[in-house]
Length: 334
Image (cartoon, one colour):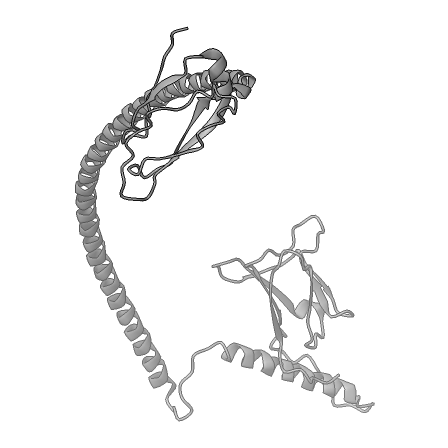
């Protein structure tokens, strides 16, 4: 056998699943395997049972019992080879064969022991390479440790003082904040009460205004109903009047009055022939008053009808006034 692997230790972290842990360093005997378990925040503890070493597969099973839970997260497992610091090989002074494998085994054992020592020294504190006096190195280490402790203690005291000062300042700030918040709350409550009162007053005024609007709307609705009724009645009467007038349409002829446009005033019509002559009288189609600025139109009785109704005839037609009104005087005697 030869020793090509320099390490004699493997370190693993638990994950709650893994049970088999491999190693790659030479292991001449199963008794040389050391298994350590370290709890979170604890120190490694050497196990004396509860694990299995497979030298063929080069692995350690831990925990060995399937009923036991696997190594949890935060836990650590250390596999380390520890060869006894002995030399069991004997070379008797007698005739016989000298086996090279025995010598090789002894050399391998010594190499493993050297690796173990180096692994231990790698975890130790040593002086610099130019150090010649081990006592001085140890004293230097002790002084360094004491200095580190002093610095640690002073730092802890400083941090504690700062923490206390910070706590006092924080308490004062919180007390001041409580006072300001209480005052702000009182002020806010006063403003809120005033705002609520103003809002309530505005709401009541709006409600009264709405009531008046509803009342006016009701009155307007009544007026609208009455107007609709009146308009409906007027429409019906108008249609009835038009029907009556259309039934007597043959009794009337149209006369138009326009403003003459000249400077002359219209004095009057003294006499309109009642059409009693044989030629008959048709109608007066236009009268110019010379005063009003608008045209007017009237209906006058047709002369033939007038002759039948009033044989004596029309007596007088007076002057048309400024409102466009004309007065006709007739002799109503039979």
